[in-house]
Amino acid sequence: MYEQIIEGLPELQKLETTVTDLERKSGESQARVAALAHKTAQAKEFDLNAEAVALNRGRKVPNATEPALREQSEGAARDLEVLQRRLALAVAERGRYLSEHHGELLDLLSGAHAAEGQRVAAAAGEALSALLAYHKAEDDARNLQRLHPAPQEENWGSPESTSVVWGALTTRNYAGGPQRGDLEATLQYLISMGAPTIVEGGGEDAEDAA
Image (cartoon, rainbow, N blue to C red; front, top):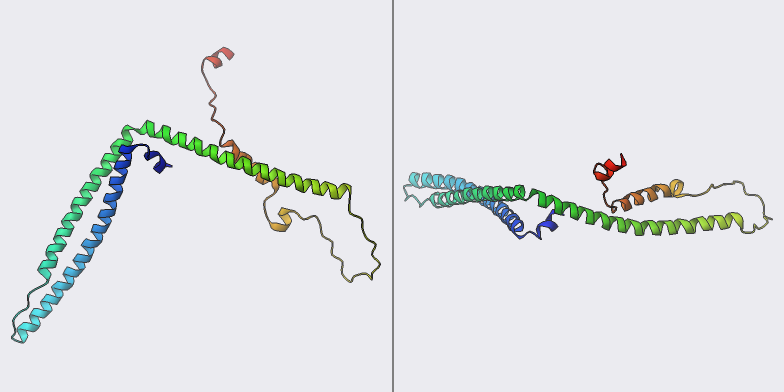
């Protein structure tokens, strides 16, 4: 919901985009610094071992690979520090904007919340209508069976060795689902989310009533 609101606030959207971009770049830079530090340490060990072997064999010491990697690592660390400072500044700037426009943002969020409540209420209303129609058909079928039961055929066969008597099947004892009253109460609550909020209290009318 917050993301939908900032789409209508170009300045805030720009600040959010800047912060998100800098966070991404900082993460990538941290990974690069860690990788270069690891490579630099490995190169140092390799250079020391290569120099020791060359001296023992009376050969020319090979060129070291660690200095170039160390230079890259130091440059990457500096870039990371700059990015982190840029990120801190961007976060502070966004914080100032949120503080200065606090009331406006709350109003927008409240409006979006109310609109979402109405959407939920409308969907719940449709679901409740469908549920009531389903229960109406179920009730009518039950009443028809009670008032006009189907004729029973006479049983001329031999008695069964085992008799099983079933009671009335419901969603509670058969499918393990919620009772119809529970479903209706939940949908009624969701429908109430779309109702406007009425604040009762003081005012001229209250004083006149007193």
